[in-house]
Length: 238
Image (cartoon, rainbow, N blue to C red; front, side, top):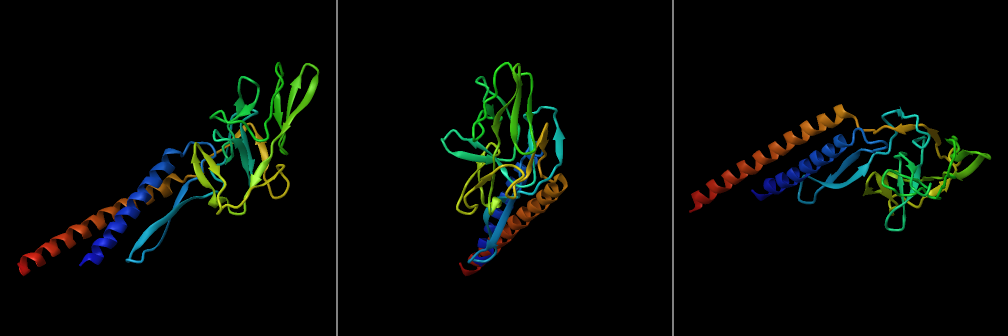
């Protein structure tokens, strides 16, 4: 009698986590560079299934959104931008919405500077970023190279751990980053003046929500039926 109840509770947990994951995906459908989460389930020893992990699907999707801002950058192909996180380490992101802080340093939307750091000379007349990641600035004395963007690649990018704010951290599952220049060593190239769209498929997420909510309701009904049956058996025995 208890087996179906345990399986139903497991099903409730799975359905709840799927709904939460789908809701998070939908809430970030317009977040540049956002990678949707995917719920991974495994068989449970007590029967049924349980959620094993929620991994990120690092496929490129959503197309490129033009902004005409030279520091809005999209990666065409593999790789991640590197930024210095508040903990003193390096995090990785596909969101290329960059700007300049008060000191002329290139930073992401949260104020985290690019790694390696790139500083734009003051009083410049324009900034340009090439496909190979070279950042140049037009100054009164002529063009100068301000820095070089480097991308990080991973053996298993889906193994990166989410750090919030569209950032990821290295993990044992992802492997160590292989850092290189855009367009070399398997890295993609950099597209200036564009942002990569989210890879969330709205129709797919809506279907997943409907299925998960139906599964949640079905498991609730199993628990109710098992509870009523158990109550009846106890009444008979008494």
